Image 1 (cartoon, helix red, strand yellow):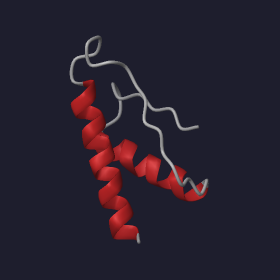
Image 2 (cartoon, rainbow, N blue to C red):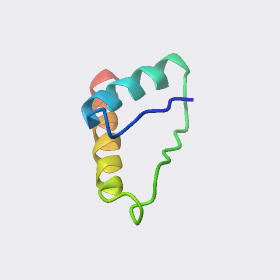
Image 3 (spheres, rainbow, N blue to C red):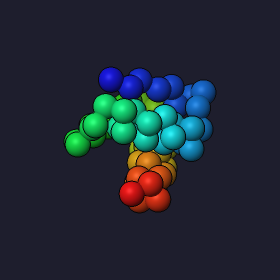
Image 4 (cartoon, rainbow, N blue to C red):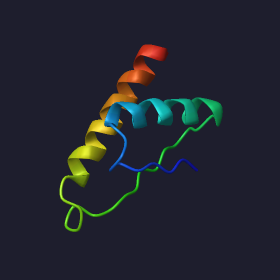
Length: 62
């Protein structure tokens, strides 16, 4: 399990950490969870940025 703090890390940093986690642990399916947008303003956009960057890293690594 990879747990990150979006309040202290940039989407780029988290995407890089997630990439390493996925590769190291041979993850085939990734579940992304976090606080609801209704209780944490900006959470949905932040998550979108992280996942978009993670996909870009995965494409460039393949």
